[in-house]
Image (cartoon, rainbow, N blue to C red; front, top):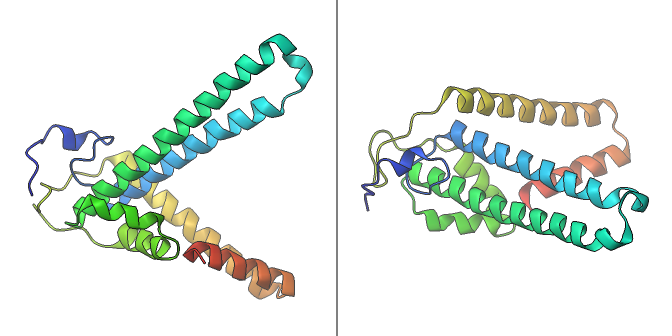
Length: 180
């Protein structure tokens, strides 16, 4: 099924079109970082001293912050699906497979497949490949370097400090990574 909407495939918030591996990593990470900032700001607002807000204004202002946090959660879910759908399109797969990412254990393994698999060369059922923008490529490479550095540091730390607690922490980290 070929989509003739060439202009919407350039919009990163449209599910039409394709994402390369680096574009997928960049946009997914950017969305998660922005969501983390929004949630952190909400938590900081709720944790502030009660004397900063008068009791009369406390409930409405907290309700506004809660609504904004909910909206940011909805935007996170939407953009996560959009990024996954576009990446699956690059693999010449249906965007409906993005639902697999939310299945425990299988979703973690599927994420790594989607993130690391080579996309289809040239045109596929979902159109021409989208050029990876410079910032997406640089940001994607930075994410890979940081991720590998964290992995090497974690494993190295446990190997050079082999206490039962460190081994338990590393074991828990890997279990969480694969969704067990």
